[in-house]
Image (cartoon, rainbow, N blue to C red; front, side, top):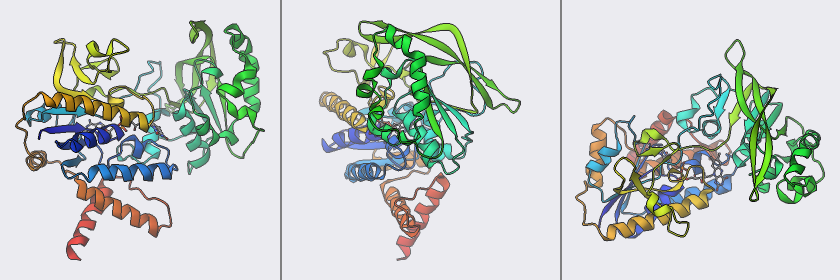
Length: 450
Ligand SMILES: Cc1cc2nc3c(=O)[nH]c(=O)nc-3n(C[C@H](O)[C@H](O)[C@H](O)COP(=O)(O)OP(=O)(O)OC[C@H]3O[C@@H](n4cnc5c(N)ncnc54)[C@H](O)[C@@H]3O)c2cc1C
């Protein structure tokens, strides 16, 4: 039996840990958040209850494995009391990094620091009640620009126009570099917001960009069959705010008002071009101004360089020697470009390996394939001399960190379930770490007195 550490308890980390534990190895998970689940808990849209309940059940099953230990509320990074080197010094045979994509892609725009400008990930973490983000200002005004046209954009429209209790937003302008045929959202997701889709504005926008679409051979009449199936349905205009699309443009500069909040967004107009069947865009000298008081950019995320792994532009570096040939297996081993060697026994899986890549099923698959690589590696290494789970717990506690374990997670789950029932709701979630810790302690105390 060998010991493997898994850093991160999102879908990729949990399913990787499951495979490794089921192969008989002692598996220890370290997770930044108190709760496991990652974006499945704090990213997936809040009202997708069924999906969230189903995933929580699967995660609980993973955590129930007797040779799998959970140390929550324990971030590993250069900026934390515990670093990657600390983990390595405890002697595991391998470490799997499944920390997701916690970094923010910089837009590099003038004025980017204005108030009211948010990365989508942070905004989503806030409305999904991830404690790190719940205390911060994510105020929204009346006119919001959302940059990007994938599923995350649809989630944000959904939140702002349907579920945001403050409902301040009257109009959302979705800013897209390319045209409507390059939209990336799923029709199923779009159904949630179609009542708020401003059809009239869409038709006008299509007329405006029609010559550009025609120049690359795109035919507007095919849009309903390709990326906008909503156009096959009769227009269903609901009450409340509306959203519309502004195609063929990209943010250039953010202008702030006297209070420092975004008041105007200058965009560069783009031209479409086609090469080998791929549609690309090219910026022109022409610009346009759009008045907005909030801007959310949903353009995907990057890995967090602060974790302390070899980092290249936007991701951790994995072995280029394996990944080069499309027919060869993808690279999971972490690679140090400074020495030109893989870091023995260090692996990345899920969004930590390929940022913002796909749904939970893809992250799960990636975790499991990565785990298979780890298991193969373990066949050829001698048993390490890892500290035991209990010794590691003591080492962490010695740094003044309160470690959350599996029993704590069960307690928290019970309290949240009870509070949901008492409030007549399908779910209840604490939005502060202190409240979760208090709930765990009082639930434990209750169990002792009973
Ligand atoms: C807004 C949004 C909505 C989505 N909606 C859906 C949906 O409806 N359906 C669907 O199937 N998929 C959805 N997805 C995709 C899905 O959430 C991801 O595919 C999946 O969660 C990625 O899994 P992961 O384990 O790689 O990363 P994550 O889920 O991000 O998990 C990373 C884990 O690592 C931990 N961590 C981070 N940093 C550290 C550190 N330094 N030390 C220790 N631990 C750390 C975090 O606490 C977290 O538990 C959505 C994604 C987003 C962004």
